[in-house]
Length: 107
Figure (cartoon, rainbow, N blue to C red):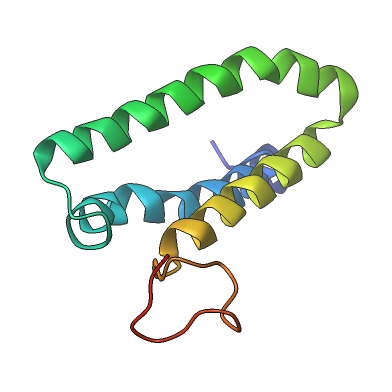
């Protein structure tokens, strides 16, 4: 059986989200250990928070599908996920504004 291009049409938007999303799963232990100074229990709490987020997302999905098209919903979810990844990847200096933070001083 030969795969035709239309059969892959649904896979490309999902791949555009899933490939970068796997970075969070790969780097979550590093985030827990180095940036948050947590051990196994802290890592477990982070995994639990991901689970809670998945359940909340599952409950809000019908509302999102009623308001947005599939592509718009995927784009919105990708943008929110990207913003969270950027926030998690930012070094914790005590302030989100780099112009107001001073070296050696944390809030």
